[in-house]
Structure formats: structure tokens, C-alpha cells
Amino acid sequence: MTDIYNSRRINILRDSVARRIAAGEVIDRPQAVVRELLDNSIDAGSSEINLYIHGGGIEEIRVVDNGSGMDEENLQKCFLPHATSKITDFEDIYSTKSLGFRGEALSSIAACSRLSITSSVSDDGSAFKLEIQDGKLRDLSPFRGPQGTLISARDLFYSMPGRRNFLKSPSAESALCRSTFIEKALPQLETGFRYFAEDKLKLFLPASDLKTRIVSAFAGLFHQNFIDTFSAETDGISITAAAGTPSLYRKDRKYIQIFINNRRISDFALVQAVDYAYSSFLPGGCHPVCFLFIDIPPEHVDFNIHPAKREVKFRNLPEIHHIVTDTLGSYLGKRNSFRVSAPLTGKQFYSEKQKSLDIGRPAAAVTSAAFPSSPAKDSIFRKQTLEEISSEISSEIAAEAAPVIKKGNITEPSRSPHPAAPGAPLVYLGQLFNLFLLFEHGDTLLLIDQHAAHERIIFDRLSEEKPQVQELLVPVIFCVESAREHFLLNSIEQFKQMGFDLQQADDGEWMLNSMPSICSGMEDELTAFFSRGIKNISELKKELYAMMSCRSAIRDGDSISSITALELAGAVLKLENPRCPHGRPVIQQITREQLFRMFGRTF
Ligand code: ADP
Ligand code: MG
Picture 1: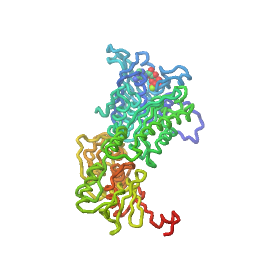
Picture 2: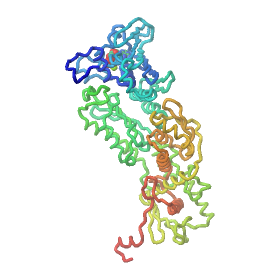
Picture 3: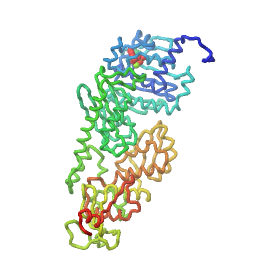
Picture 4: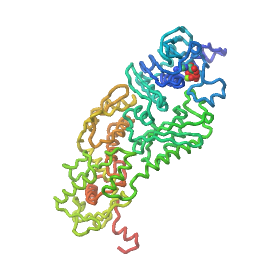
């Protein structure tokens, strides 16, 4: 080995060495080969593209398309450095709409794998097959094949052991290939894509609309009821969004994905614009699911600043930022206007509520769980409507012969079914701001946050009791990153005790076979939860129960009967820790003395 400190001689690197070094910029792992080959098949106008991965893409990556194909003359040139049919002059890069233009992908892949290309420009069965070894043409001869191109890159980095050492396990590399496959497929709705690993079909994305594509690409992760698609255009910039409803929030930004002219980019400013638009609709520290496909005239963006074209320079970033927040803001604003804003009762309430559900959460979420005062009947693991709950509670109260005071109906002496302080009646005064329940309790005015209180009650019950489990007729399938699989495998037993039957399928896919019945309608949140990076099972249990109780508790804006309100207050007064699972208080009080002082009255 040359001692670099003693040697002062300058060497001009051999072409093959220089080419291998340059190739490293474009091709650093199998995922990059997938990216470049899929780009080429898309640029060739294919309507069907199949990707085959073997051994995490290290053994072989094969892409088969039915695009324009290459004739003998083009095959002879395609693997040479700077060989491209997409541009001629430098300035062309600001007008081309193709995904490739640098003419360096095939030459880079040729420099670091065993490459073979079979291609035909017609459907008469005639084709040519090209074989490359160490970046050099080894054979080009007539072959048979349909119109289109089959490219196979085998033994990646076989001559570069240093680079090979940087690769992860085949399953991790294969997961990366799969996510690149999805990224490439998401914006190309008119093309059908198939992904095979070890010759097994893992993902089939036929030509479809955007919502279908997203739902099928992230199998089981998002239900279509939680995704809205819409488009807008301003000043030649068009945006198509597949926006998750606010109920689909996550702790990470993994599913805020921005595509500019059909390429996924990582531009934090635009991710922040999405976060900003959703910020007033999500709990603190949470992020939405939102896929944005932005089309910008090519002269307004420069993709030529990053080897993988992952970063771009915009001519007018603030304008794009503004269009993103505006478009998402008006979508979220419209959704929100469906919310019940004035107290409604009976049928009117439910039909109005249903309206908001049609574009948001599934119908199951309308229901609410019962309170813990009658454990035998209204187990929180069974979902009930508020009306059901009220009528059950009424009959219990009747059985106990405990009269109840309702506002405006003070005809009898009253006490709560569960008086907190014997002797001091709990009088329900009404609901404030559609959220706070007001009670007179002896010398005190009590204010209870109906959602937070109900959440705590359900949370406590979940932590204490064995859930009623519901078998799923069709298991929910979802994807899990390889780094997360280990944790899930080790926690299967604990999940079972919590009522979740989880089973590993293969290649990052998992199945949820059964779950607590209280979770019906929460499948998307649950699968998102299982694939989230929480390491410790007790922390996970706490967060999971908090999510489940939040989802099934009475919501802000739900109107509830006075009987239900009294029942809830009775349960709250017995709580050991009157805080919601996130730590917020569920009850506050103002004494008669404080109130008198506020008004300058002598007590
Ligand atoms: P670029 O895509 O930047 O032009 P590449 O090295 O990726 O450079 O490809 C070189 C050329 O090979 C392309 O410009 C195109 O003409 C041709 N080519 C590559 N893949 C295909 C394919 N799947 N179908 C048709 N032509 C292809
Ligand atoms: Mg290319």
C-alpha cells in the first residue's frame, strides 16, 4: 500500500477506477439501482413495470417494462458514461420533464454489477441482448422478446468489497427497495406496478386513482375513509393532495411526503408547511399523514444539485410554501365546518354528526363507551350509543329509587347515584361550551371536562380488566420496518394479554387477527401504533390505552343527557387520579366563597 504522507507523485487514475469512484455517488446501495431503473422504465412510457428483488437486491435486481425499448444501436451506447437520449444541451435540463437526464445511471450500474439488458422496439418478437462485464461490452446479440426492456443487475459491488461492507442485512436492503418502489409508483397512476421478492408477488399496484394507489401501497396502514384527495392550481403551479384526516395523526413525519414533478424530495421547509397547515387541528407534537404532488414548470426548479435528485432548488420557495399552506388550510377549514357547532338533540344531532363522519372517522367511532358504575352491564369493552347508555343508566337509577335533579325540573330532592360526599346533593346545571359539565355540589361549583373525564375512566378500566376480544373475519395487514420487527416479535405474548393477536407474515408484513372489541373502527390508528418506534412495552401499553380511551370516549361537542352527566360526575368523584391519561385535569372547582369574592359580596 502506498504511504500517502511520503508519496508526492500525482497519479492520473485509470478510467475504470475513476468510473467506479464516480459510480459510488449515484449507486450506493440496491435501493439506488431500483430508483434509477424504475426512472428509466417510467421515462420509456411503460404502462406495466415489474420489479424483482433477490437477496435484498444484492444478488439481483431485475426490472421488466413494456416501454419504448432500445434498438441495437442504442443498446450499444446506453451503458457508456454520459449516454442519454433525454437532453442534448445543458440548458435542456431546465425544460425536460423526464426523470433522468444525466446519462450516468446505466454506466454507474455497469461499473458496479454484472449487467445485462434485453430490449426490443417492436412487438414482432425480435430483440437484442447486451451483456456487460466490468463496465465493458462483453456481448451484444439478437435475442427474442416482446417490446420493452428487461434489465438485470447481479452481484452488486462484487468487485468493491469496501462498499459491500456498508450494506445492511438483505431484509433491511429489501425493505429500502420496497419503499423506493412505492415512492416511484405513487405519482405514476396510469402505470401498473408489481413488486416481487424472491419470486413472490408482494405488492401489486394496478393503474388506479390516487386514493386507491395510496391505500394499496401502504397495505393496511390507512383506511380510505381517512384519506381525502383534491387538487388546486395557482399561477401555473398545481397541487394534488392525498391528505389524511386529522384523526390519522402520528408522532413522526414519515408520511408527510412531498413530490415535485413526480420525484419524492426531502425539503424540510415544505414538510413544515404541511405541519403548519395542520397544526391547529392536531394535538401538540403530532404530525399528519399527507402526500403532496406538486407540478411546477421545469424552469422553476433545479434538480441538478443532488446525485439522487432528492434535493431541489426552487426559484420561488416562499410562493410554493404559501400555496401549500393555503390549499391544505382551506381543505381542513371546510372539513371542520361540518362539525357540530350548536347544541343539537336527538335525531338532528346524530344526522349532523353523521355528516361529519362521512368525510372523517368511520361510523363505529360515533359510539361511546359506558361508565363504570354498572360493571356487569355496560362493560367499556362493548360499544354503545350515548342514547343506549342513558336508557340503561335511567333504569338502574329507577331501581335504586334515587331521584335526580335536572336543570329546570327541580321538583324533588335529589342526590347523585354515587354521592361523593354523603349528604351533599350533586345537582347538574348543564353543559358549557359543548364540553364542560357544570354541577353544584354543596358549597362548590364543579366543572368537569367530559372528554378528559371519560378518557380517564376508560383508561383505568382498560388497565384493570381483561378485555373482551373480537376475532377479525379478515385480518388487518400492515407493514412494519425491519428495525421494529424485533420488538414486535418479542412482545407478541404481552400483546395477546392486551387482547391483540399479532402474527408476522413475511417481508415486513404483519397481520392483526383479533383485537379488543372496543377497538372496532380504530384499525388504522392501531397499525400505525404497532409500527411506531416505542421500545418499552409498559410505555407502549400506556400510550396504546391512552389512544384507545381517547378514541372511544365522549368527544368535545357531543351533547349528553343529564342522567349521563350525573353518572359521569359520580365516577369522577371516585377517581384516585382525576387527570386524563395525558395528564390534564378532568375536574376543577370554584367555591361559593371564591365566587362571592369575585363579585365583591361579603361571604
Ligand atoms: P438517463 O436516464 O439520464 O438518460 P441512463 O444511464 O439512466 O441515463 O440511461 C441511458 C439511456 O438508456 C436513456 O437515456 C435511454 O435512452 C436508455 N434507456 C435506459 N433504460 C431504458 C428503458 N428501460 N427503456 C428504454 N430506454 C432506456
Ligand atoms: Mg436514467
